[in-house]
Amino acid sequence: MDEELKYKIWQIVVAVFVAVGIGVTIESDQPWMAIIILATGLLLRWMLKARYRAVVLVDERTRRISEKAGSATFWVFLVAVALTMVATLILGSVGIGVTALKEAMEPLSYAALAIMAVYTILVKYYSRKM
Amino acid sequence: MSNKMKNRLKVFRAALDMTQEELAKRAQVTRQTIISIEAGRYDPSLELAFKLAKIFSATIEDIFSYGEKEA
Image 1 (cartoon, chains in turn brown, red):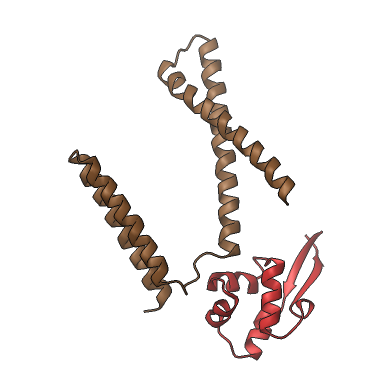
Image 2: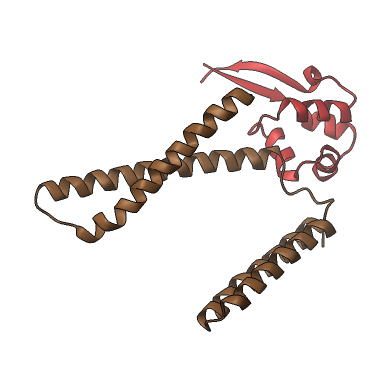
């Protein structure tokens, strides 16, 4: 079995261990155990990376893919929040009260605004750097 | 009309009887990146282009060319 495949299998094993472990400990009301499992998972991940240092899993192409996916996710989120907020306001103005939706949308809208502000600041920052 | 990068990476690799895996290791990228470059789906950065040229003891222009392709 080649090193890359071994690394990927171990990564999945660690991820499953952490996910199941945290799920079980939270379900059984043991938050400290969840933290210990998370820390163990991070330690195992670090050990794996050290053990399979020669395996190249991230390069410029994967980084570019990640950037594109991140940017697309950002815009999809913003547009979805904006459209849902507008729909909620329109429904409210014609007398169809969607209280639960409005309550859910309010923090989301603020989050979207905050994300947009951070995005604008980071764009300005990187524009000066590059 | 759209511009498109072309490359002869596969030809250079074949000339040295090198596998995609070996080239990927030497260029410190994933094998998928080599596959994508050869298929013309991904244009490498200038740094990677220089790295590849160095591996084949060639110039960037020998491996990569910038052509115009009808859209």
